[in-house]
Length: 177
Image 1 (cartoon, rainbow, N blue to C red):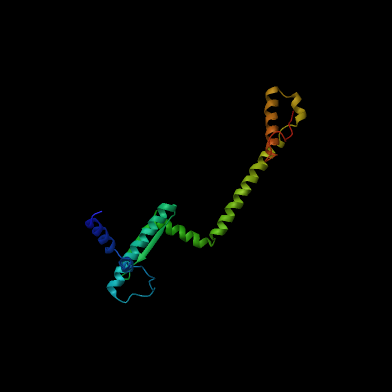
Image 2: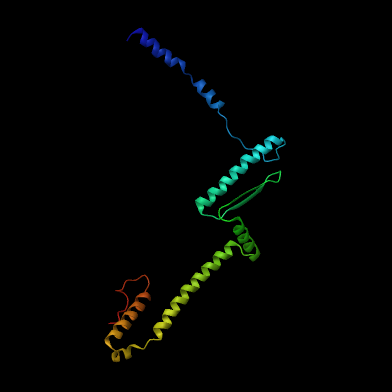
């Protein structure tokens, strides 16, 4: 190894120091907590309003697109200028809000009511099916009926037996044969 290559290797090793890296890290700007109080400087206040308004409008748009939510946002500047965003129609959203506020029903009550309605609809459907099956002639009358009618009623009885045994296979259910 020549003395020139040894010197250049040594020279490059000596140019870097850990202290320089620490100085670079300290030079980076770190965002701190902003104290929430009125900004006294009018120019700074206007710039902050403009930036935060744009951020708020962007968030409202993102919420409406990502979550398919109906969003309406109304902002008045300190000078009285109107800024608004609506994912659908502003008037439609305001009317919907008014109807919701007027009814006095909160979201939990609406959800519980929807669940009860769905449960009642299912029970009503099952009762209608049972009434339909009970209104048919008894099995003793099937011997006198024509063969096509017997097959149809046999299938309905088999279906009722299958429905009446939820969670079990057909093997465990009683067979009408």
